[in-house]
Amino acid sequence: MFLHIKVYIVGFIYFLGILFMILFPPRNFEQSGTKMRRVRSTGYNLKYKEYIDYETMLGVIQHMTTEDPEMVDIVTLTPHTAANNSLIALELHSDVHSKKPGILVIGTINGMVWGGPNTILELAEKLLYDTNYQTPFFNDYDWYLIPIANPDALNFTTSLRDYTSVDATEWSRNISARTKTKPSEWHKNIDKETSDQPCFGTNINRNFAYHWQDDVYKTPVHCSQYYPGAKPFSTAEAQAIREYVHKLADIVHLAIHLHASFVPKKEFILYPWRYTSRQPSNFQTLQEIGEYAARQARLPDGRLFEVHQGSSDARVAGSLSDYISGVIGTDLVFVVKPYHEIFPNYTDTVALEIYVQKSISAILSLVRGWRSNTKQNTLSFFGKDVEF
Ligand SMILES: *[C@@H]1O[C@H](CO)[C@@H](O)[C@H](O)[C@H]1NC(C)=O
Ligand SMILES: *[C@@H]1O[C@H](CO)[C@@H](O)[C@H](O)[C@H]1NC(C)=O
Ligand SMILES: *[C@@H]1O[C@H](CO)[C@@H](O)[C@H](O)[C@H]1NC(C)=O
Ligand SMILES: *[C@@H]1O[C@H](CO)[C@@H](O)[C@H](O)[C@H]1NC(C)=O
Image (cartoon, rainbow, N blue to C red; front, side, top):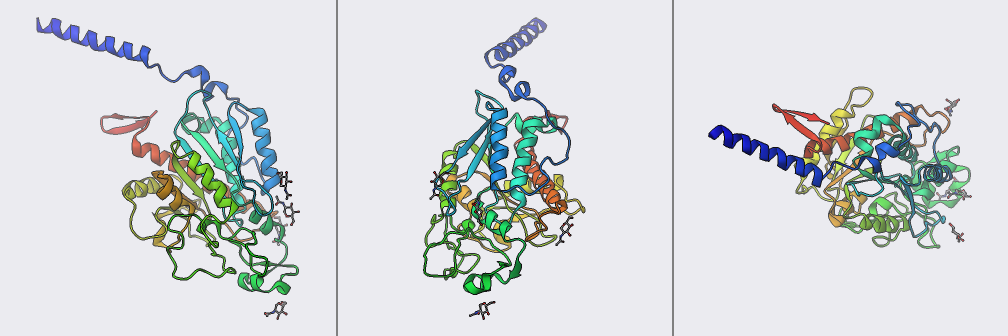
């Protein structure tokens, strides 16, 4: 009698299972990237072996969208920069019909990060065409990429590269010191807020309207490399990024600012806040995902990225990462800072390759860390998590 009831119950459960599969079928294979993809490259070698400038970036993404119009979209952001360049966003979608959790990566807000465009285009190339990256990185997410967020300063710093270096403050103040010289560092854009002074440029990563200037008592002078602008969002670059990230507010779950550390052996994965030492409410999760990523993305010499809240080193207000976290409300926001030389040798690309490999590895490890943290696509077998 009991046996009969058990058999009926088990049969009924199977029936429910079959019904579920029919009502909610697994992802439609026909429409997925797996089917659409043509594999064109595999392995870990870089495709772009020279520093990519703004024009080259335009050419590369134009080529990508011509080759694969169903998967690649180009969005031109407004307004134009001081040198009349546009920030360009590259969007990669593995399915035509379904929306997936979005990942946003923004690079080269600092014009001295010459390896930023290479990293993001190389990442796009791998996501689109390399089977090693298909699962899990491309098929499960939509990617939103801004390879060059500060095109003017990238052009500015690379075109002065062969000149003699002069202290940045001296260079900024003294126009007659500028002939055949370059500033020793440049963390700003190149816009001229007022015409009457020699100093120019605003630090875009201090120009966002979230606790703007909350870290300082006195506005840095215009000549300073940390000049935050006359007001929040005074720069075209920050305005363009603002508009874009607001549009993506409900779509993006993980946002990464690809930055650089200019100090050897000081390489970081940071998370909000940067303007205060107060911890964000999901501090634990951010630290865990960051540490997971650091272990996965072990640096070539065996060290690990240091993982901590951004303000642990120095308080920085008005930054992009705080804005995305505090205003847009994205849960998972990270700043990735692998080492990048200041004014590296433009023709010797060994350093470029190292920066690109470290950066891609850190970005993808953060995605893995996120998956592992939320147990997406994992099954627990006798206490051991297995990813599929
Ligand atoms: C800026 O560039 C756009 C095209 O990108 C062009 O139509 C416009 O004339 C340019 N403006 C200036 C002032 O050069
Ligand atoms: C780069 O700067 C040069 C002048 O130094 C200018 O002619 C060129 O149009 C600039 N390119 C971009 C992309 O800003
Ligand atoms: C400006 O730079 C020039 C050339 O390096 C130098 O001769 C001059 O003394 C500098 N002026 C000031 C006020 O420092
Ligand atoms: C830059 O690198 C190239 C190629 O490795 C080398 O030939 C050149 O001497 C280097 N230049 C400097 C200034 O070190």
